[in-house]
Length: 303
Image 1 (cartoon, rainbow, N blue to C red):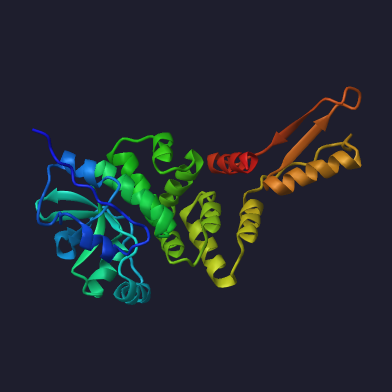
Image 2 (cartoon, one colour; image 1 turned 30 degrees about the horizontal axis):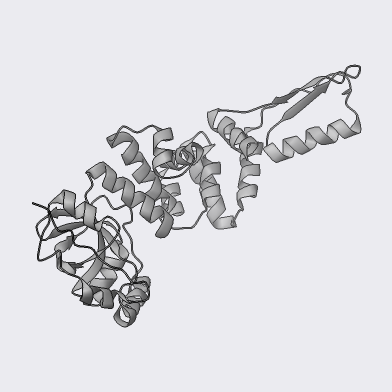
């Protein structure tokens, strides 16, 4: 017995309301088996009652600006919800948000009864990954929210940094840098979350070894309004080893001394350039103070 498949014919020139009126079915009234549901709805959307949708507890975004929600509510009242949300089917008449919580909340405020939704069938790991990717690209997550979700994916679903980077369409270095933020004192994390400091400030503070030093430098940034470069310079000076003066004069010419100085300033580290005057061969020595400083240097060189 052949099964008749229902198709949603989407005309981009029509509104969602027009499309809804031409649909052959409403998924809230007729529930299909998961496999058929995925096949039919993997690219198209259906209208789902707002009251049948529950929040995803693993949603990385926790805070929603009231003014922003109100503006979106007014827009939805006039134009409807332009961009469908994404949900997963839990049971008959029950769906869970994968992405689009901001749109869902605004629709509730606008007292909309049903909204367009892409319907997916995904396990918990896939749902978290989909939510993270969606929100990272569209919802302007703050760095701490991203770091916390990265940490959960790595630890709860046994992902390496390389595998996680592939899933979230980022680089391994970026993933590692975000996760290192969670090692910072709570004061620094809160300042970053509240946008009182930048990601650059936070990354510089990671290179400070002790808690008291990190908090003290954070206070300097907040009080004095230090730029990232200024903060990095202070940290560099405080960590610079006391190098005894070498006897005798350098055999480098002014041009090579200039190169040595340029490299030192760009990398923010002591550089020693040695060159054989006869053969022209030589070496460049780059000093680093700890693993964090080494990672910083590697990133600069990669860039």
